[in-house]
Picture (cartoon, rainbow, N blue to C red):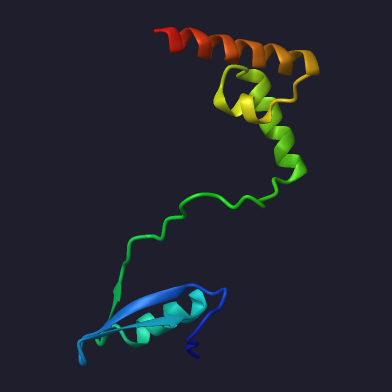
Length: 111
């Protein structure tokens, strides 16, 4: 019933009250429910802090349907950071934005 090692199933960390040891088990959610009911007196589940992802992969591809959603949100909020990354712009808009950015940079450098 229990599987150890890499898998796409969730892993659970337990504390064995009899041996004072911690161990990790990879199993299906349905198996976890049964395991918990059968071993409620011996094992205590240890809740860990979630793993955090730092950074993003450079090869991550956004699905086309989601790109359209991002584009519509960007159009509704043209001055947002999202708009600067996802809004479909004409060549004229892109050049205008570039000129404005350069001007703002020059002005802020003078201050």
